Image 1 (tube, rainbow over the protein chains, first blue to last red):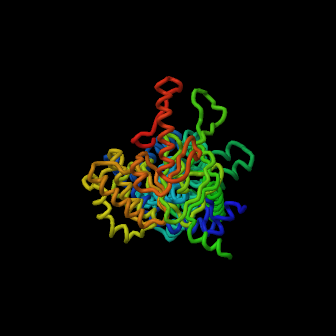
Image 2: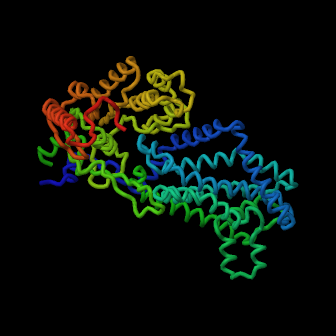
Length: 288
Length: 264
């Protein structure tokens, strides 16, 4: 008696729902790029439709965050004197970290919140976190002119080093994608993560120096050096550092050129780990 | 390769080998639930479907018919067993709608792209699909504003716009007014004629008798009967009658017979 698998093979049948090889998997993702683009755009439009001010929120969101941080940290805690152009420092921080924070948050939700889509259309699950990141990158690009205006208004000159900003963004995107994939898999079987994620991400932003140069404060506390290393070379701090390095003249982030190396390394690690981990979970995403 | 093997290659389209599906549920009523519970919906189904076969699946609500259909399409992770097919089976089902917050038009675009159409093909055919769906007046509104009948029609219009070699149909999706019912039955017959193998889940015995060459009866996630439509349907009806009689006499708890409604 031939086994069922053997019979299927002899009849030229292929196994349905079986995990493909990693290369085939990524190729399938690339073949669905039209779907990803359409999905990300439609999601963005849908988000606009639910709010009266629609796309204006893409600008209002970072601006209100900046205003809050400026009052809290700049004014009340006196951080505005810690760097020459505090408003510019804050603007780059808020706009840049928003890409990471929002990619992580909507990527994490993407699989668990769209189970209906996964169980009704023949699409690999990796499309969902990927589309979530594409959506956030689009949002960032829409709000980018505002960042430029803020920088110019606060007196930052346009320099050749601004040309490094697109490179920094290109390093941030794969990092955000990797984080989105990791969190999406994690949250698909432990939905409770959704409860703590927003808080964790805000704290990460604080520790990475979104609001003020935290390492300068920490160094006064006489902590072990490894704490300082963690603070300076954690991915959040590194991506903020390279953006500020490119866009601000009066502020040099700690770490120097090493930040660019660290930024590339973190991108590579996060994207690779994210893809492999998510791929290994393929086939479990529809269930619960 | 010998003669039997090559003969088999030309006919076998779908092979289910001991397929089981279970859902994970967190029990309520505890502050800290101890562990997730497994609810078995399909418990070891094996069958083979060849080219030209049209298989009807019958059974009571909650017997696991729809779950089995989705497992065949590879849309559900299996807890055991495997599904083999000559090409990816496509499911036309009700289930959850696509993306509730997006408009009908956006859902059609996304659905068609996911089924493998190119952007150009979608642009070319979208008016025809909207027209067929019969929800043209609401096409720019979010899907969440649609009635369940309208959403089912839209989904049917999307899914049936592409030809498939193995077609899985959930008949409950043929809802709506008489006009749409007729048009969609027509469309389904066309699809069935073009598809090589068809699996149809239905509560309508007349629809099954009229269109299937074979019937599989599912009971509590297992195959209870498999054979010629008349034989299996007769056995199923007899069982349902027996159940109804028992219930009237109060021998059993609340139970459901076959009905014309849709699966949950």
